[in-house]
Length: 370
Image (cartoon, rainbow, N blue to C red; front, side, top):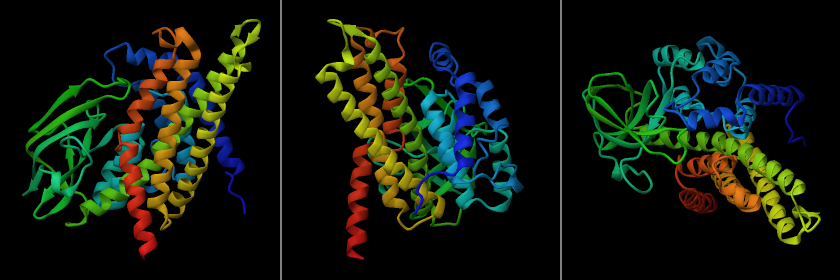
């Protein structure tokens, strides 16, 4: 049984890495961080020309029609380079929601704009602290109007439209809303990673349209989050792998007492622990990619495993990178903090690892009881 990617898929990944090494070195991330920009618009347009935003969008809607195995490899390279583009909310969440629940007109209008990079989408869920649950959603969608406030919306500053979880009757519905419409107020929020901005968004009788069948909103939302978790896990895997490479190279090249500091047992063990975490994340991400590409019944469990292990590996790597770089690791001039910011942001943007661990337990219990 072959669990590896095909030669064509590996070539696509190499092309993506070469492209990002040329167009998105870490200096591009730093430039966005140190400016008032929320993302690099030129890089976003160039990625669209490569077909990345439309990787899983059918060709009839302007997409490249690659597939999920190709998309996750692109995602891994986006994460490796810390590319400052709103790939997460637009490609993993908004696109998936429309693919799963959109009507023909919504797919025609929205997917073509997403694939061309002309639109940026997002998903608006949280209204307070803790895990989002049907009982703590107060935003209402009635009579084609949306009213309520969503907090910490990913790329909420830059998105063209949002898919909003709201109460409709006794259930949860998804509403598709243009963020340029009347009654929308955006309030930027300080983020640990300004290259992935967030904003609070208030809706006051804002015109919106339903996405998906009535009463199916919560079910669709869970499917979107599971799929998004796997794709984002590949970004985290890319970031963690890059951290390991940079840290190994740094410790091999820095000398103390006439020896590379990587030769000391204390450093060796920490690098070994990080290597093990990255390999564990890689295995779980591959499992998730298989489940995603086959729409397997194991998708929910695979999403939890990928999300938890990739979050752990990237977070551990970012912390250890600063520690093993020593005094310079804390300085603004070195790039360690760029990885630390992205690792912390990615670990909470779809719910914390603790929430996904709890979700994993619940799903395993349900599976064993069936």
